Amino acid sequence: MILEVCAYNIQSCIVAEKAGANRIELCADPTQGGTTPSYGLIAYVLEQLTIPALPMIRTRGGHFVYDADELAIMKKDIFTCREQGCPGIATGIQLKNGRIDTENLKRIVEWAYPMAVTCHKVFDATPDAFEALEDVISTGCSRILTSGLHKTAVEGMNVLRQLVTEAGDRIIIMPGGGVRSGNIAELVIGTGAQEYHSSGLMAKATNFVADETEVRMMARALKSLNL
Image 1 (cartoon, rainbow, N blue to C red):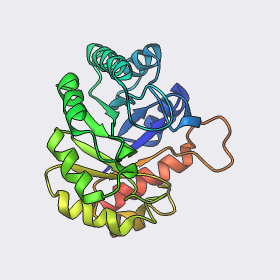
Image 2 (image 1 turned 60 degrees about the horizontal axis):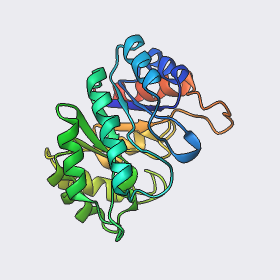
Image 3 (image 1 turned 45 degrees about the vertical axis):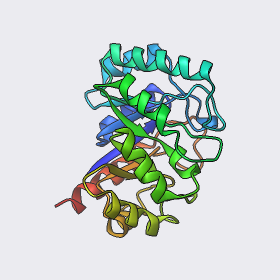
């Protein structure tokens, strides 16, 4: 099983790799839930880490309805990530009615190729999880990061289990949202997912650096459950 750590700085990246994480989602601006990191940070992470790092492609915080100018910026960011040798990106886009913007997400997948594309938690802002599942699959994305349209993955566990079943081998469902060492085993048993997403941040953390002990405990839990 795979543990992806959402990292907002190089310190979290180093902690995550050292503690046994399998992949990084690389972001800026944690107060906005993650935006596109700087080119310098992307390049440095690719140089320093041996585990894959997937930059977030998101021009700003707030909603996921983007205009033509924002899409043009995202396209340039995607091309830059591809040129730097990133194995994938995380992004998402929706229509004003809340549904996945499949037309533009297909374009993003084409721009990103051969990088893999994770549809991030824009998925949880859609009105219907199973309609959104089929929409995202149609775009060619590799995985969906979701808490099952709930605030946390634990609260959305029933929906997550159904999504995993419906997705089959067509796309990866990756639970995220409040995933911690204290509930990750419950999520594995309850959802049947093979990949999990966590920031590894503790409640009292103010520097947005992942807690090494927490990440290590999650990684160990997944390893033990995978036997």
